[in-house]
Length: 238
Image (cartoon, rainbow, N blue to C red):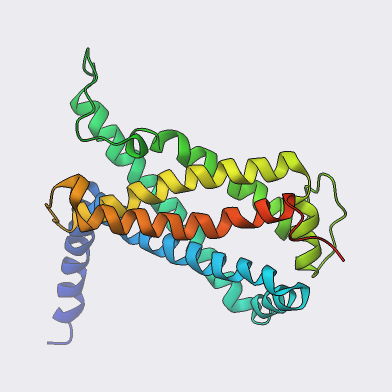
C-alpha cells in the first residue's frame, strides 16, 4: 500500500500539470486570467486613489498615510510582488489572446466596420503601453525620487513631493494624459468583465455599461482632480 502511493501521485502530477497547461493555453483560460488580474489591479487602483485623496485633508493626513504604508515592510513588498505578478499575467494573457486573434485573421478586413468594438477596445494596444510607461515614471518620480523635474525630493514628505512634483506643468499634463488612457482601459476592462460573465443586455442600454461608466468616472476623476487642484493653486506648499 505505502509503496504504491508515491507512484499514483507521480502519475497524477503530470496529468494535473497538463490540465493546467491546457486551461491556460485556451482562450477561456486566458480571458479568465485577464479578468482575475484585472479585478486585482482595479482593487489596487481604488485603494491608491482613496489614499491619494487624503492630500485634501492636508500634509499631516497624507504623510500619515505614507507612514502607514511603510509600517509593515514585509507586507508592503508582498503586495508589490502580487501586483507585479498580476501585471505580468495581465500582459501575457492580452498578448496571447491578441496573437490568436491575428492568427485567425492574418490579412484583416478591407473595410473596417466597428459595429461592436468601442473606441476604448480599439485603443487598448496603445493605452496599455502608455500606462506601463506611466507606472515606471510614477515609481521613479514619487517612490524612489530618481526623476524629480522641477522640485527637490524629500524622503517621507508625501505632501511636499506630491504638490511640488505636480506643480511642474509638463509632468502634471503627462499625469492627466495617463489618466485619460486609464479611463479607456478601465472602461473596456469592466465592460469586458461583464461580457465574460455572460450578460447579454443591449450594449448601450445595459447595466454593465452604466456600471463601467460610473466606475471609470469615479476612479479616474479621483486621480485627475489632484494635478488639476495643484495647477489651480488649490493645493499648494505652505
